[in-house]
Length: 325
Image (tube, rainbow, N blue to C red):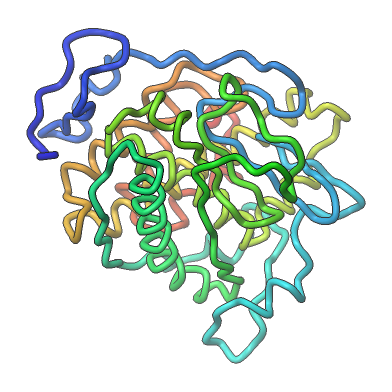
């Protein structure tokens, strides 16, 4: 697929190839792109989704787009994390359950360059799995120096293009509820082939944006941000205004983290500058959501990461409420 395909003329799913990078990535006509409806929530477990769910697990299920406190824990045991973690500080890397003050969001921290040699994207499940595995390897390579500088764990994330019969996160959502989701209990991004192809076709930018967002949730888990967020939940069904605002801060930060990766690798390997621009633009394709933020903010936080080039630009936790609405 080349990077100069024309954009589609109207709303609805475009023909393949489905993405067309803009010559000016921040041009106003991005905001005029046809919105993609967000499926209404089917139950409180999985919530409203735009193809991205987070699940944080300790001994029990912590559900869906909202990390919920279970038995006082919202992340895997520190000892297990440390055993597989990378670190260069001489101290055992440790997740820090803090939000705005998390070490990952300190000065001078950013993902690094990575060799993103991606295979051809195709409809065959094995092709899709190979593409995602290479992309996740690239994401890990890019994010590792940031987590190491913050002295936080860097567990390897895996990716699956099939839904598990049993997983650390319990029952999976349905196709109407999600396109992809992240399970913290087994540090796996689940991106079922049929779901992803139905949503994205062979749109490289959309596949990359989705997986980069899900990996952003993995970064939140490793840093301790998700654990700290779970402690902020106050209502049994995570449906209070305060809880929904916390969830929006989680999801908007994942967009920003996804774009941070894109700006770090843009123009090298298989991710050209125009493809990276198109992937960032894809974060602005959804309708307004009370769990993922307005369409404007979904894109603005992605742009903040892409332009800011450092994790500090993604500190949704210190932003005024009006910037995460």
